[in-house]
Image 1 (tube, one colour):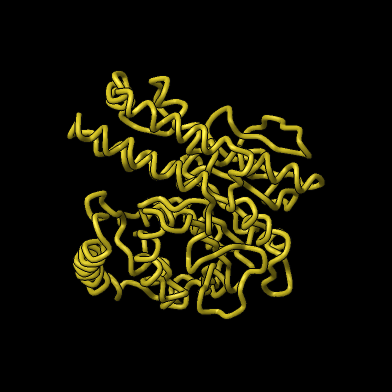
Image 2: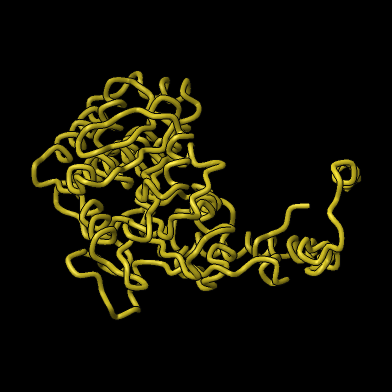
Length: 373
C-alpha cells in the first residue's frame, strides 16, 4: 500500500527532510546582485513590451475565437519561463507551427492558421523586443548567483549539487548553454526527451542516453543537471542537495514531483534548498504570491496546496485564494478519512530486517511476496 511521505516520517520510518524556500523576503539576508522585488525578479523595458504584446495577442484572438482561451495560458506561461522560450514560441505561432511539449496539436494548429494583421503584429513585437541586445534575462543572473555565490551550510549550491527544472526544452537548452559558457570546467547535463539529452563540456555538446546521465549523477561525476518536467519521472537525484525552478507550472503537483527528485531516501542533507523564479508584475508572480503564503510547513512544503490550479481560478487573487481554500478543505477531508482507516496498519517495529532471527530462503521470499494485499 502506498503511503504519504509525511505519514511515514511521523511514524519514524523516514528521516524528515526540511525545505528552505528562496527567495525569502523576510530573511533580511538579501541576495546581492539579484534584483528581487518581493518574490519576483525585476525585468526590463523590452520584456515589459513583449509581455503586453502577448496579452494583446491572446485578447485579440479570443474576440474572434471564444474557445481559444487556452492560448492565453500557453503563451503567458512560455513567455514567463524565459525570454528565449517566449521568443521561440512567438516565432512558431507566427509560422503556424505548434510549440513543443503541447498537447492537442491539431487544435493549436487550427487556432493559428488564419491570424489577423493585429495578431501577427503582436507576435512580431514579442520577437523583436526579446531579440534586442538590452533584453537580458534576469533569470540567468539569478541562477548563476545561487550556483556560485550563495552559500548554505558553508557550501555554494553547485558544491551541494543542483537540479534546474523547466517545463520547456527551449528554456532548458538556453540555461544549459549559457551556464556552459560561464562554467567552462563544469560538466552540465541536459536531461530531456528522447534524442535531446546530452552533456555540455565547455561550449561543446555531446548527445548521451539518459541512463548515462543518471549513472554519472549517482557516481557524483555530474553535479549540475538541467531538466524538463516531461523527462523527470523515475529520476532519482538524492546525491544533489538543491533545486532551482526556473519557471513555475500552474500545477503544484508538478512542483512536488520536481522536489521529489532530491527529497527522497538517501538524501544526505537535513534541509534541502529550493529557489523559485518568477518575473515581477506578471501572471506567474500573482499565482506564486498566492501559493507562497501556503508554503509554511518546511517538512511538508506542498501539503497546503491543491494538486492543480484551474485556469479560470486565475481571474483575481481573491478568486484564486477562495478556490484553493475550498479544494484543500475537500482534499484534507478525504486524506483524514484514509489515515483514520489505515494508520493502525503501520507498525514501525514490524518485520525489521536487523531484528530477524533467521535468514529467509528463496522459497520463503517468494511465498511472502506472493501473499495477497
